[in-house]
Image 1 (cartoon, rainbow, N blue to C red):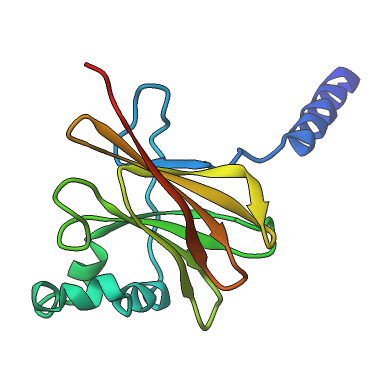
Image 2 (tube, rainbow, N blue to C red):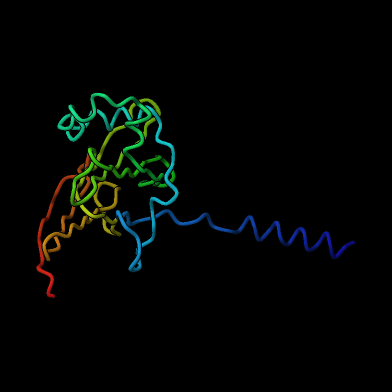
Length: 177
């Protein structure tokens, strides 16, 4: 009996010491090649976050294609994962869009800072994916996006300016066959 109580107490103590699973830091349209499948466990996107996405310039540019979609159909154009850019103070969503809220060659990605009443889009890129870097500005991690087209890799680096992410560097590299 004493051994059973001791074993149960030991198991509970080990459970308390377990760290929560690390949040993803890389978000790509496809996984494999050492990339995790960040969007495999996509989460429900709250209505106020959907409203923030519908208010973006990207959505406005697709007005005709989106006009006939109800809220559920509009929500179906996205996959999202929850992250904390500034742990644990804020809940943020990384959102990947599919056509028409995405391109033919690569998806569109957003980061939405989810304030309970006023979510705000703080990042957008049209790329095959992006990564949160270890470097940062104004308390937020820098971001590197990658896009692949016609044997060329396009890389963009973004920094947070206190309100949203801004493009700081853009370069490309031809891929050798």
